[in-house]
Length: 439
Image (cartoon, helix red, strand yellow):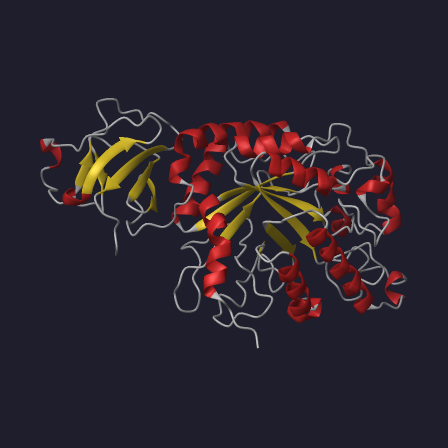
């Protein structure tokens, strides 16, 4: 009978809940048709239809060192690369298939290059691995609502050996857990319909991973998809439970709690535009200030954010993404202390922004200025040791103005005469309390 070990769990999760911000990289053959990573499914492309992209794959600008540097410069602490996506193409040198990057014109083990580059920047290494494989002959297509060949009657007549597929999938997971050194994070994707848990031989798979990579953090998608929380949240963890919950393209309204009301570790996975893989005509990029505020929102609710980039067919992160990463990085250089190691505060969200907290440091994120001094609702006068602007370290005095004399129990910060905030995206006040709050 599996028994969940809270102490071991907390130990392996410590770096992750401190990091708070990571980069997702979705890259593969789908960068060439440039219509997103689900193009094979949407367009119902056969292996033969898709083969031209394998033959064409030759990213002449491919430079994983540049990707790793972009992540570090943006203030990210970990990077996760799609070692294999649903189309079945492997970015690593698997001995169980010929459908891999070492057999393309590029001729390189992309995962090997990636893990070396990320470690060189001092970042944590993560690999994404899909449970699904549209290329493998023994992956079921009949009655499967997402398989590219779901409507191809002739293809669906073939006999399949699903256990053979599972053997193949498990062996590839064993390869990535064996051949690339210590992995900090393993991001499985994804369970759906009746394809979940022990259908993947989940206990066997997780036991192997834990044996090979005892400290690795694993998401919850052996059990669920972007929907659902998993068995850890239900209070009855299976042997293949996830270490964190993975809401996709949304931020939970109140963070995520288990059945007992205890906070769970979670990570919002978010795209910059509307696709994970490169999409040439998808120019619906979220503004950098929005992405910064969404990162703050995640942390203020006790979560992480992993922000995606989808390099193009030449291997370059799109310029629109790089522009946003630069702005985010500049803000993080000044204000990262309000993100790293921070989480929820007992202080309620103010109407002008959000609050994050780390020990006796409370960070007020100010999105809009006040008329007159700024109210720090939830802080008592006798608690305050010091207030400063995080970006400069300059003291911010407690206001003694008569204008707020009707509110003697509220601490007001004197931001000075200028009604324009120093940072028009998010100006952060660090309030140091005399003692850590216990509410």
